[in-house]
Image (cartoon, rainbow, N blue to C red; front, top):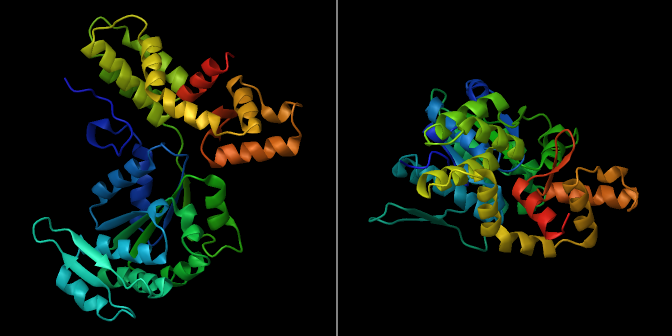
Length: 357
């Protein structure tokens, strides 16, 4: 038997957990003239959800992660490479011949890979404008292109004022649906909800929450019930209690439990043994992260690990605490649901063990 749990990469088919309502909603937006803004913390499954919806919709799409893009030149190059993968090369060569700066396009006959490059001295913003306008030219009314821009909160780190340039072009395009993904809620709200922002109300806002407990319990039960001599119902309850239905960490813990039970024949203390294995595996990474925190951040994290509200604690000035919380949330270490929590439940356990709490 193969381990029925998967984490750390895009999931599909049997590994995909529910999200039927969200899938239907995304498909509905893409079937309209509107754009979608999808926000959630990291590792909640945004990419898996969107790619699953692309499979259902069946229209051409390209997907770019803005965190990996360095400047406008790089952005333009990646757009062209993505477009070359799905549209006839001869048609595209004719269209890019009209660019302000014509790129060099080469193809590897053995692998089929396309390489695109511009002269480094050319104006990156002009190249990007040409690339964005190309998207409209290759699209059509009956088979509209879908453009997915992941980690869109990074847009102005790529180039100052780039948001205004993109909005000026995108708002005139008729045969494209855009999907903007973001993991930094406050930054995404600044971009799409602030009146003075270039992308103010540019699309339909959607926030992706944790998978409902009842759906996750059903998903876990179905897969853990295949193990012999295991009280899977108790395991499911404990897993949910520890991970609080976080998609990534729930899959990670379930994967480790299944592996210990099926491959090593362990039937007792599966939860504790699985967590110990995970902590051992990530011990070096967790320690490296911890020693790079300043003392204020360490105190805040320890408070949160103790289920204490840092803002109610008088050890630090309120302004200092607020700034630290904002910083830790921005960097993905803390999330706020009903209260402040450590995003990674295993890192929380490591902090408690490391500090003897």
